[in-house]
Length: 496
Image (cartoon, rainbow, N blue to C red; front, side, top):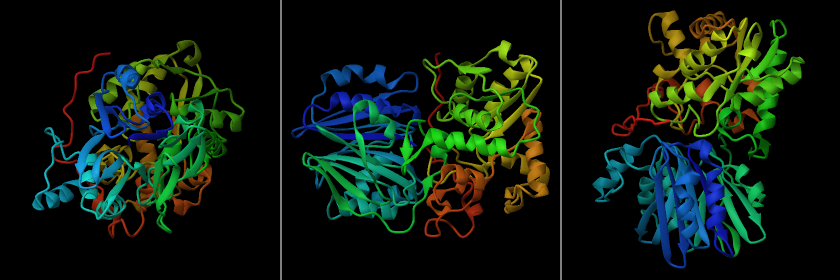
């Protein structure tokens, strides 16, 4: 999931665009990009962020760029923004999401004699694909609507044009887009944490499928949202989102505290000396657990912040492991001799938790380690994001395969937290992680922690549930979604 931001200002927007885009750095590790419109002239810049930070790469650009309209992105995969001199006039575009049928759509456009330029040995570039799809419409709004109708998966976008900035939220509302205002500017963001220090106030949470135009006169609704279906990603609150952000008016930090409280309520029989959270996202879950249980919250593992991003987002497993190993530093004086509850946002693959958190606690003399993930076992690869792409990656599926001695299609018995099969699966994962106990959050408690109606949340990676209009008859049919054939970046040597 990439982070996107756009601003239309009465004066030069460069400073606001620079700092506000940087507030999305937790959402991507591959590329950063900005595009600014000054009169009729576009200025566009893209930098590789795989071994650096947005601020250091873009500081010189921000100092020299001038213009009153701009968009920025921290990208999890694609090089963007993309520039297109379209039949509707030139524009730049940034996107967030995952287009599951990208290759099929690209082939169809190629058959219509539409060319692509941003491949560079990888799969089709998603922003370019969306730009070319939009260009097939009767106008920009019609083009955006037709592009949304064509794609499978999700894609929100910002389009910088002479008219202003078109902000379009994907049809399911999987990725948020929030409009803000201050005295001299309008802005749209994926993360409301970009607003307070830049003095914006939230004006509107865009609706699924809605398109709004920000221009010199303010905000204009260009296309109303779709009725009914709304499936915002629950993982935003559990892990992906920044603690200071709100989505649909619900704050991330508060949800994580509530999540920790629910974990503690189901955990009355555990021998606990101290409560902790895997930094950073697990910390708030741990704080909630400590508040509910009355046990002290302490920090046996601390994160060395400078230069280290999230170990979840890089595309290379080698890079993920290296970051996970180097960023967490154990404190023996806090760990030794204690029974520790370790709250974690999730267990996806399990390898980093096992090798780079749990192992450090045991090596420093922990008496017991009780792992408490803030969400249920992940059962299905995400259809709307690049986070997980195959069943083989998931710790729960590895457990099921071992217990059944084969791959099975129907895993429903393993999703019922009261079933014997679920208990056997959790016991297998606990042994594999080498922990004293393992207890997952339930789906119902996770939904209660978020506080929105269940039907408004995407729970696909835990339950296989998705809107009927977007999901195959059986969720199992698409769990082996492959990466684009040329789409996996080559592993990079990482210098730390």
